Image (cartoon, rainbow, N blue to C red):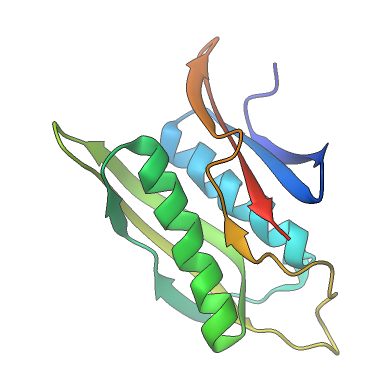
Length: 144
């Protein structure tokens, strides 16, 4: 089993993102990377601007949803695309989970950034967060 990175899989009218990591934090970073690879070639995005991507949720699934949805909101409202993600810490207590994270990117520039597909929203469809064989797997569908 691959224990790093992300991949896309076919899914009816949407995109299934499957991300992996040695830690839950790395899997969330790779999940965000996978979402932004749907939008553009992230290797061409310069880390000019840093945005705070910390949030909280009622459980891990809700935390993942809110984390990705917050990043998509920056793209929708400010035209930003991201290519670098750092999750410092994910902490779950009895009634909530919190993530400390940042994303780096810049304004989308059609002369430099490939326009692939618009990601409209994060969804709970086919969402799965689990640890198997010492590796975290995070999977979910984004609406395009």
